[in-house]
Length: 568
Image 1 (cartoon, rainbow, N blue to C red):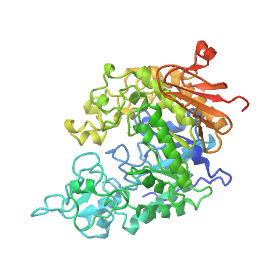
Image 2: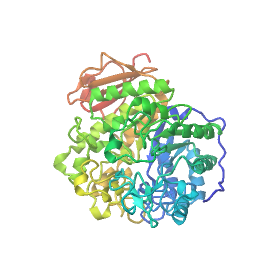
Image 3: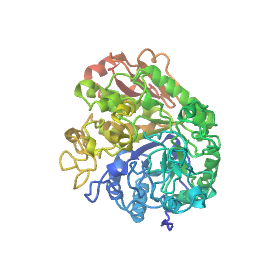
Image 4: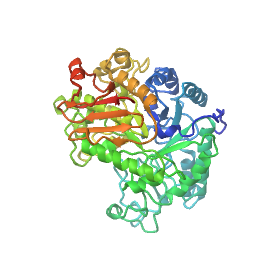
């Protein structure tokens, strides 16, 4: 492993609480910008687009995995946690990127994947070459099989991506992989695993990284016991910190170790947990100041465009953050879900199981199954609602262009293991996988890859990308890109202490209104009919108001407006 960084000095004067109400933009590096024309986004591409990121008005960038990888799971199968994939760049380019981002006033958060490595990681290769019971094998979770000759897996578990969760190695033992078979799970009871990850945290922190997004944060601590439960028994086990695989209480001992590392730096490094847990109280543990400090709240990603749903989610999550002393997080789109412009153009989920939008993607994205114009209108309104809330707002690349999910990807060109490891009958929950939100961004109206690079793109881009490109929207009044830029600019000016007050007089029926300190009022109309606005100065609307609407002081349906109270 590469271990000698070129350190980037920390700024002792930097605001230690920058993360509490940050606007964070997620970059999926392989699909952001390609600087060498090989069809894969890279660090050089990111560096070239720093002025774009700065103009957008961001506080931080979250960089999805950029490590050496065979891409069995989009880079989340990591060969080396302390290096850059040669297809994406070099450590020198990483340092250049950090310098460029910091020079633009943008912090950097990097993805860390501590639940598993890839099957090409040097430790796993050593484990395969070592005998049963060896130290090398103990860094992972190996078990003997069942059946007369160990020919059956240790348990009938199914991986998150479908298919068996155990894979047999040549000498007959089996290893656990909660995800793809190329992603063997670490054994976090082994001290060397702890030591290696604290080394990794320091490696990137010394290079100037400001924080970490922790993948599968709820999965590290496992207690399998001598007799493994069946798949059915696993599902029935309590989710109270004692489940054998997920969200065990002792995982927080790991994060206490990490917090000690974070606090070695000035300002302290930050972290946010991807923790899928059963209750808000369980999530709050990850956001403890003694642990990671912040945890993702995915509730809005799973909610219909509905005033009651949104109010309940905001109220509950602000209460959770008050308990931990952390700030809450808000997110509508990311690399794992159908884009919210698409979700909001589909019929309401209304409590149905599965991921919103999966059925539409599975059907090939039919035009008669979606109102794309309404979906984008609602998505813009939802984003302005999000940006007005106290806490951190996480934005996903391309949503500032109003991009919809790309459903029309031929099966042969799909890359997501969730597609390849499931049968057609099993795909109702996730549709056709996550490739549709990972298609490379369109920067220009024309060109082989719409300005993504001089060559093609690693996933096919649809023709309609031309009208959703940066070139098509840059400087165009009323475009989604210009709305995001102005909303982020105003947010920086208006942001104050982390609180809100619901305006009960305005919050009726399909309308939600709340006020932030300093007289900043957000009004969102979740319905179809226009509603009356109170007195005050209109600062920005998610859908530009017509002269008639301004004269009548009305907000149309599926729209959000920011106002300044009289005298504020």
